[in-house]
Length: 392
Image (tube, rainbow, N blue to C red):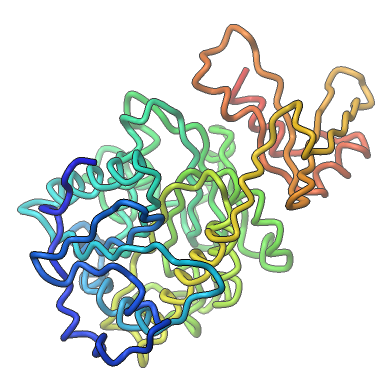
């Protein structure tokens, strides 16, 4: 494992809670914490790594969110773990470089290094343009990836302008060589999004789910999240009353409990290899409410991680039930797989043999029982159709 310690500044735990007074089972006593220049954590036998990124120069009207990492830690360290053995390192903070590009390079390098060593980085921003650097951490892994963003807007921006927290997605989509297979947004609010952006999502066969579409059935976000290699969470997707620490926090959005549930789904996703939580600005917080919630979201992610089933299906595995559905016109057939371990569902996309093998990992896509019911009724599930269009 290459040395990444030079990218980090140690955490001054004296500025936070008194770690030495924490009880034995609290996170501040369990985590391997980079608290002095001499004790950068050894990353052997580590599953998860906390990374603070103190960068907000490309934030539009949310300067100050770069101060969030330590305020979140203040609450995170006080939490207790579950009935599993935590193997977590807190690597400290990536301090803003001479330019934002320097910060991006540092984060990209760290994400790449950790993923290669089967360690999941949990990034606490900082502004959401850091999602671009999180994405670039996958550039040299020689695979196409899926991104899920929990956000009230799309952040497409103008590709001709400099990158910002409102335009990072446009930069990702246009990046060459392209290694993005699919993008899914969960929770966009129609009155905050230009209709042209919605139409662009449709043309690209990307997935976009309105807030009202998923609020009443939060469990339907699980198969969406289960597609993700990388997840980015903008805190303003949560309603202002539950997470006020953003100048653009909306009266509408997800409730705190729903955010935590989606974080647990993220942790349980066997293929998810990085998580970023962005746009928390302590200046706008009320009694630390948002930082406290972010800490609990990370707790839920960890809890989900240690409940992973490692049950991604293979076609001839006895641990799965297979269901074969022939559509009414008999032009399409869909194979469904159900895990006996977790009761989770997948469906198979026919893969043209002449296509590049780099897309093969996307031919079994997560779905829900409702997709199976839809197929039985003679309708092709929307998520099957979009994936099929990208593969043909």
